[in-house]
Image (spheres, rainbow, N blue to C red):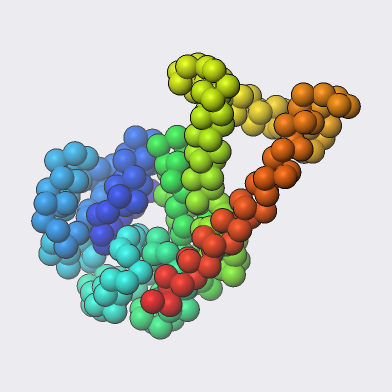
Amino acid sequence: MTKRIHFIGGGQMSEAIIRAVLTNNTVNKSDITVSDVIAERNSYLSETYGVTTSELQSAMLSAADIIVIGVRPQDDLETISKAINTHSTVDAVVVSIVAGVTLKKFEALLGEGRPIVRVIPNTLTDTGLGYSGVALNHLANQEQVDFFLRGFGKVMYVDEQLIDSFTGFGVAGPNYVYYFIESLADAGVLAGFSRKQAWDIVLENVAGAVEMLQTSGKYPRQLLDINNSAGGVGIHALHELNSSDFAAGLQRAVLAAVQRTTALGDE
């Protein structure tokens, strides 16, 4: 069944979703419309992806089956909601990718008679990997949006109380991995390898470690116990990591990201 999808806001995350669903043939470009307040952005998206764009969106809203709100939390959500209520059909599903803004707040803006879905998209849309966190209000169901959401990665439906945590932990997760990889590659250069050699070794080890966890079904601690002999090289390295407060620092970073997500919705 053909579904028409309208994006309010054509920023980087909206673009990443559009690129992924088109690449995966989830949605036809003729069924995607976008409205951004910046005319140059509309022109770019139209020229790059062949989707229909315009700063005037009343007709786009009236034709949409799914409306994606892809703006910043500090943007004028009240005016956006009024446009949706004025021009769209009551059974059009509203999908919010706005960080920190709750379903309850959108229900207050849009009315309680509309299906609303809160999505925290992953940042790995071009890979097909990574989970997007999704919470549904009482009128929304998975069948309405699942095909669309799976067009840009994997989907994990959670209680809304976990959405802010999902943002700081799950969606921001690649950032922590990138930082670790960069730091480990720097350590390889410090140990005498060329930048390319260190980079190749680190990427292979990271990919292989993930594969080992998935195929073995073991937890990291189990594999650490297997890999580290008494008094050996590995356990000495782990001792230094333990002394560096690495684990606690990472956990503090996640909690800081979660707290910032919640704060964004209150600003």
